[in-house]
Image (tube, rainbow, N blue to C red; front, side):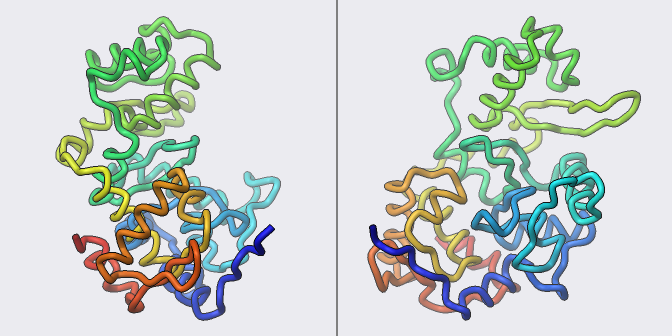
Length: 282
């Protein structure tokens, strides 16, 4: 079995700066969180150092060795991350949903067309690719536009909690439905809406699949500095062949180099302050 390549210290330093794994760059407010997501393109919500890639929780902690405690309710950093997640959902400036493989992720608006090009489905494909429960939930939401969880379960007829949760996850993964608001009074509930209600231009923009793979790979590599075999696929939910195609496209245009099989490095370091313009490069 081939040994897994190690991340060099200088690459860890690069990731510390870009992924806010430093005490001087901690995320503390919703505006901080939105700037963080805009800079890096996409991030997980509550993952810790045991999973690769940028994470809002790690950015709140401001250290690379952050580990989610067992009792998250009593942990101030986990609690702040949860509060920020709710605030970001309510503000609606960044895209949030459970995407591929059930990963709860934030997307900067500019990345939405690229993720949609990979995981989104067209209306004509819905009867073939969505389960019956998901189609019933989607039909109600297209009529009502926004609904709380309990009302949506009743109106769709998908009253079994497990079946409803599976349908909602299926619709989020297809980038059709997103949480629009988190309410705690009179009881905890999500308000669900269509993704196109909040991000109409981004979700209606047509992007070629190869371009989308390249730009997703660019967003990750800009913040990561280097990617090792399987890392991009694990972070994003892409298949490994698709992740490889995206990375090789960056090598072809001169944005990255490949010093070893499956290893891709930035050709030139990118300052965190310049990362958004780098990610928009086409």
